[in-house]
Image 1 (tube, rainbow, N blue to C red):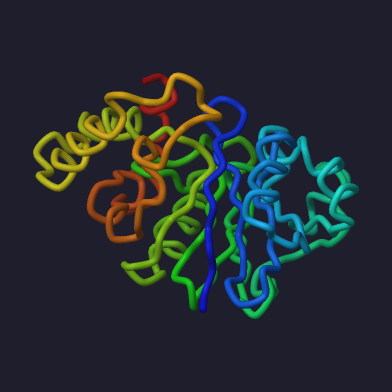
Image 2: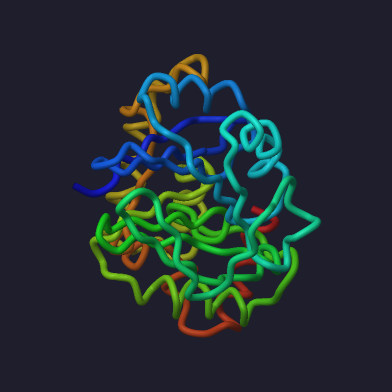
Length: 252
């Protein structure tokens, strides 16, 4: 039952995900900038690719979509406003829409501000959320096409409302740097100190070649509970406070 979630390191420090229904082997590819690492993992798992999901239009999350869509004859999903901006997008989605991967159902959250068409994919039965570049482990993305109020609603209202045990699959391996910055905001937070030490241990001996990375050196997934306890952006009390912290992070 449930979903098998394969983490595929791509493009330097990105994460692409292969999401497989355990019952049917039908699968989706999430946020793919490179073809070869994805194809290798698809072939290794025997997954049957049925759809390609993008959280937002940035090239480091979508560049491989045209080739993958052609290879697997699969539709490409993205927010309705990303039509024309996200390569090979064929289906527009929005808040509350349903995504099906085999027997598993996901729902779409609209969470703009990093980009104006950013979405997250939530799979409640699997207790998993794919957050792209909006919510990172220990941090969040830059505000490129929105404002602090939009980011506050995305992080501190919508994503924070998910249950604590939901696992967070984000778009980049930025965790150590994010937590280093977080400690400048909350230097006395014991949960944050503990998490930073744990992450440094995990990342102490990363694989020499990112494509050969092993699960031991990945810090993803995190959890909603981890983020509520240690992520200064999700712990912001207001949009104004979040905006202040984001400005500090931009020059960190």
